[in-house]
Amino acid sequence: MIRRIIFYENHFIDFYSTQNEKLKTKIQYVFELIRQVEMVPEKFLKNLSGHKGLYEIRISCKSENYRIFCCFDEGKLVVLFNVFCKKSQKTPQNELEKADRLMKEYFSTKR
Image (tube, rainbow, N blue to C red):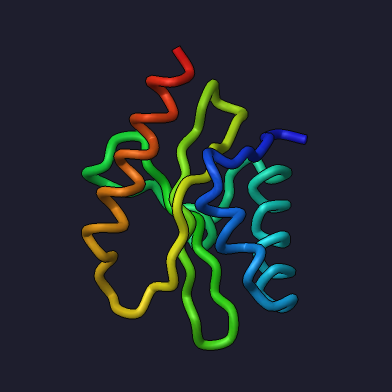
C-alpha cells in the first residue's frame, strides 16, 4: 500500500452512507487507485491551483460528476473533507471555501 485514506469529521461518511451501490463501488475503485498507484491520473485526482495543498478526487457515475476534496498529510496520508455533486463547469465557491476551512481545522487540531 502506498497511501492511507482517512476521513476528517463526518462530511464524507454522511454523503457516502446515503448513496446507491453503483456509486459506492465507483468511489471504492478510485480510492483503491489512490491507495495503490504512485502517480494517480489527473482524471481521478487533481491539484486545485490557487488552493494550496487542496486536491479533488473526481468520480463520474452515469451522467453525474462528484468531487471529494482532500489533502495529503505526511505524504502517505490522504485526508478527505467535503463532497458534492458537480452540476456545472465551475466548482461552487462555497464548497471550495468549506474545504479550505476544513483543511485548516484539520492541521490546527493536529498540532
